[in-house]
Image (cartoon, rainbow, N blue to C red; front, side, top):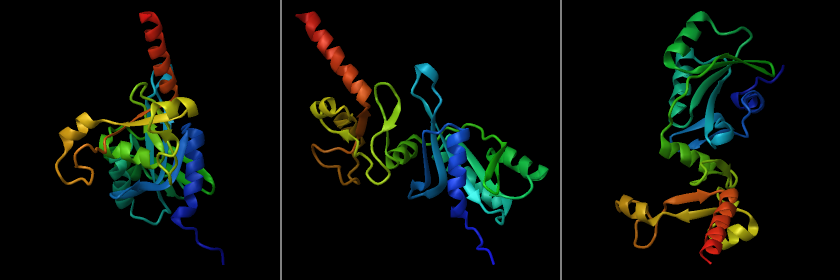
Length: 229
């Protein structure tokens, strides 16, 4: 008797579809924070030639046996993390008119999984995720946002969040890596005594510069010094 597939068996199928159809440069499965785990999560560039803006996509995967309203509500909840939210359901036939109406009313996208093929039935609207949770999740996936150009770049990996960035300008220039620095001014303002870093001369306010901006910043400084001479 063939083994019954579990939800997690469909994650790679949805992940490959997300990468190919939505041009995501980063995809992860079973990712999230303490408030919930997202089955499949993708990040893609949408800013064109003049912006480093990104868009994140969350997909909740079901095997077709879950009550549609319950599954839809779970998919919608991840708008705190992502710009677009989808429910991907395993089924031989497409969604019914009522199901599409429910999804449309709630504001989620729908994806049909049939075999190894995914088909987008309904496109998700765009949401504004909570900045705090959105950036924290990106960092957990090894992505940082550059404070200068606004792009999203590889700052590490899922297991080692900041392994591809350094904490001094000298090392960043020599190793051609991104830079992580700390904003003490904002950190001091946010202190409430509850965070383990809420002690004098320490802060947890992390900021990033991508390697391109580190090099550009050096060129600006060099040009300014040469002009003054």
